[in-house]
Length: 596
Ligand code: ADP
Image (cartoon, rainbow, N blue to C red; front, side, top):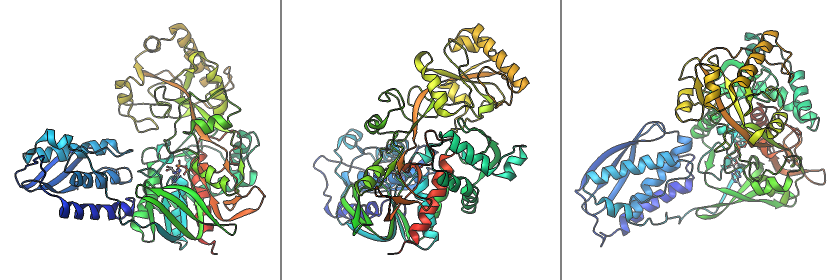
């Protein structure tokens, strides 16, 4: 329980339990139980959560979670906070913890069950108001060598590297969980990895990856930064593997990735990155995470950044940095106002949803600008053509690799090279009726019903939820998705001919693997969604932040999506994760060595 659970929460827990024990007086509202220890369980996100509740005749004395398989990174706050709130308020009318609602609800259900077994009055228990958590006694000032703002891929990589290089580290994370957008990503990690690529007969080179990244961003990216990203990606994979992360041997082309150089982690989505780095933080001393702690301001002293001001549920916290501060707060894809302010290349984005988590609001850019940091390319916003129509998220997408997928519009016709750049595909999609496409694949992508997409969802579950459609013939699929069957069949027939020729389709597609000719056939609806903000804080190849005067700002580093200048006008699919890990490590190493 030491880590990820803001130390404040732990102090709060002790205080609250003590306070509750000392101050609680049998209630006039008349809670009454049969004294004893009761046990109950309910199913959480990953499996059963079992609790043990101890009551005396008139009060709840203790609530203990004795068994669970929830992901600690996501569920710890709920597992700690809810028992505290139940005891403090002598109630089960407790709010779910944001970001861990399934766990919260299961835990509350299990506690309610145990209290019901103890003869508690359910109506009374469910209606007694919750008292606020005690927040007294929390420190308002801390000091470490390196302060990292943001607990996504870049921030955690920076934190771990800084700690490996001898620094004490605190990571401030505003959400109740770690992982940011990184944990939600499909996990594709571009790297020139000869051993894996050769297994599949794929030729590649550092030069090709550099060139595709540079050209893919319309030559607006900084070639020096691109080179650092590409040349250090393989080292980043080795570093992660040494920390225990596992990658599959397969290599694939992620949409907009332009080449088959994406590694796929064994763990679903981006969880492997966060769990690997989180496990290191969990086990080591001198490195910790404060969740639900929002950095608000960088502290300057004589032109040098010397700390961070933050807010927590308890109030203000100042964390001073002996060496340096690293900004790793991610992008601003979830900040509609900021998007609208800088957007010049797209039609209005006000009503376009996003793949991003709600904490992607550009805080780091604002904080860094306020102390004189330079920003670059804020107008470069990446959209994907592959958002879930209901939520904007990437989940539900059924394309497993570009070379096995086609996109058709509502008329059943292809309209773009599915291997094109992300901006090209999204612009083409915006010209289609209702800006709507269907991803279409066949059994090669999902040999069985429990085959998972890139977002850990089985095709059976997507079909059951009505988020994907399955049919035994193309004609039947066309009817299911309400597109013209003749057009649809002709589209697939023409595509299959191009697969045979390995080229020569109407859209200049070059990535071909299998024909779409084996039942069952699948289709899933997708729509444009805001995905990545390519602009941000200007850095140099040492991840030092550059000021508006062209000089570096001493004591300040930045890494990950919060930075700008690498991806130019268009980020290659699969380049974000190497960006976060490579530059996170550079920032961490240099911050650890940036002694005053
Ligand atoms: P990257 O891929 O660059 O690491 P992520 O989106 O994965 O970006 O992670 C950024 C993290 O920073 C998120 O977890 C987000 O909640 C966190 N964050 C954003 N703003 C703040 C802030 N003001 N204080 C603390 N954490 C923040």
